Image 1 (spheres, one colour):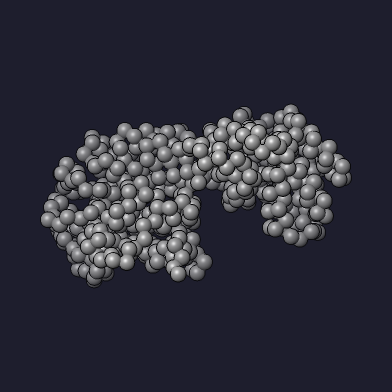
Image 2 (spheres, rainbow, N blue to C red; image 1 turned 30 degrees about the vertical axis):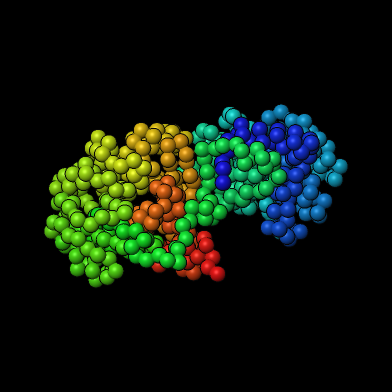
Length: 496
């Protein structure tokens, strides 16, 4: 799903108004009606009080329509016009008159005495047009909303959130009901606290414009993941499903390779070989008999030498940074031409020797967690600066970056793919080792590198979404990711 910026959103509105021969007031009515219908379904109890905070721009106009529709449906409605939030727009004034016609008036009073039913705050103060920090009066209202015990619903965007720069203060909402397509700012780590749940409402914007307008930002949901899925063919055998080589492990960290190796085979590759130090041989053969094993060095990998021909290689999980291991990695990078996934300490060693980046194959996938990413890129000022650094690094070194986080980003040159699957259950040791195995498996099965990264991240996250319906998120561990891979696959592609 494409993600558009504020300028594209405005253009989509203009084209829709022109091609559908409607007014901006008609489009506002249509958009606000979708919010009203969602609210009616989510809060059917007519004792609910909707406390609507409206700015005086078009977002405030949306809020006025919502307030009117709720009032006409016999809900309790209270309206606050935030007069310091900009000058009244034409559509705001039209809908303010319509609201008054059904008995809604501006009531700038607190409502602490309301006790009949659920209190829901509707945030319609600012929309996508915000370009400056809110003034002190508006900040006070935002803080009052954030300190309330009400359920908070934002119209299009949480008020105070900027779409193209760092947000300093914004309404913290339980739901943001955004129009037609997602907004990039929702999914950046600096803004996690501002929106718990994001709902995208179709308001019928011009389909041709949406289809033909390009974007470098994409949201990966089930439909987008399914586009990249490669089914298991009826005539497949282990020789057609790809051979993965997992290089890693050191004394005390053999578990990382066990997890990665098992994840690779459970994701669908036909063969998997683990290349590990000798201290892990019995562990690996006992833990995972389906794996083949090659060994080198006693406690760490000291050289990397093999005579097999894998289709994809992962290097780094549990490998450590012993000087002999660093030399082995350098020599491996100088001669390897096979599709590659680099993770964990292999990334850390490369961060200390950045000239090694010139040795890796084109479209190599690197999978750093936040601290590993910082070592690769250096510091960034905010999420928008981080995005620019990610794109610049990807272009300079011709790599695909899987920037792991609560919302993992896959970056290939100027294109950024934001993953939507997964939850906090994945915050557990070994999760990244499993992800490296999953992505490498998909590479070996013939997925294009960027598709392997995108589909692998989505599949990995989906295991946790499926699992928390059955087990506690706190008890979820990396082995459970592997356990739930089958159910995650079936969730993406239901079996007939």
